[in-house]
Amino acid sequence: MRKHKPTSSFWILGLTSLGFFMSMMDSMIVTTASTAIRHDFGISITSLQWALNAYNVTIAAVLLVGAALGNRFGHRTVYMAGMAVFVLGSLMAALSGSIAVLIAARVVQGVGASVLTPMSMTILASGTPPERRGKALGIYSGIGGLGLIVGPALGGLIVSQLTWQWIFWINIPIGLAGIWLSHKYLPEDTPGNGRINLVDAVLVIIASVALILGLSDKSWSRFSIVLGLAGVALWAVLMLRQRGQSNPMIPLSFFRSPSFDGGNLATFLLYASMYGVVFFLPQQLQVVGGAKALVAGLELLPWTGTLVVVAPLAGKWVDRFGERMVAALGLFLQGLGYFWIGLTTGGEFTYAALVLPLIISGAGLSMAGPALQKAVLGAVPSADSGKASGIYNMSRLLGGAVGVAVSVLVFYARGSASSPAAFTSGFKAAMLTAAVLSLLGLPAAAAIGRSESK
Image (cartoon, rainbow, N blue to C red):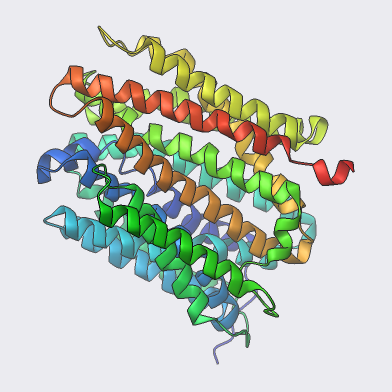
């Protein structure tokens, strides 16, 4: 076996951050290209939602399986394999000639991305000296957050200068370079002997997909209702199977903590609210506001850009005031911002009226996210933080997928894409629904820390 020279912290941080950045950016970059994709393929918004949801649902469904693969076959090996699958999915997406092929490509991308985040974090944490680990993880998280910020603007820039397919072409040379450099510079680790429970792995994937598919049918057909109920039933079966297992994929003991339960439920609702907005807001800016894709991406910066300013402060606020207060305030501010937009949008649409509520809602998201993550991870022993992190990220991504599905249902209940006026009517309803989802997270956030206070 080839032995590697000791790897510098620079290469470890740079290469692990690259994978995290790519996976986070691709969850957002498609948003400002959505109008171009819809027009190019001549599809409905119901079909379009799967260009976003297929990616997030796949990551959520495969995330825990990806973490288990890393423990079994080696983190560096699985990290490079994940990046290769991500590149393959990007190639398929760039060459797609129909929405069905694009959705399939996004599923492949999601499979690759599902291992990039847990593997990159594990490689970074194990390859960085303890005295520099906190700083390295902070930089790593910041780079991932940057992917969320620049994704819409970069997508808009690419669509305005080239075609929407180029949002996927750019992943290919970067991903291939990342694979080669990872093989050369990332530390090699010894594969473990952990057993992967294939039945549980398949159940996670099928249950997640069935639930989201069932929610995504605006006609509420008998088939969609049965499919959604089947998803719920399969999740119940999965939970029952975790009992008595020596190494469960989802340890049920975690759910005895109100902080863990409340933190995950609040996370689900926080991102259900946010992803519903990120799906429709760029389309509103383009369809009704008349903005080009690049301008629409830049117009999102008052919302996404708050992450740079607020997220670092949120960590200090959590240490001072506690996770419960910061998370609750964040959920409230996000809901307030979306209510503001929903109530004031109508008649003559102007971007200027959106700026302040976008800043308020973005600040709320940037506060609640770190607070809820700390609450969830702090509710379990440090040795179990990997599994807890996986469950947290599943809650975040499944919440996002459900949020998009619900917002599409509400949009079509009150509006349509047939005209700017009809689009605005549906958009208002979707924004108010997003606000309600965020505020529904307040009781869950109130449970954080309850067990510790007893």
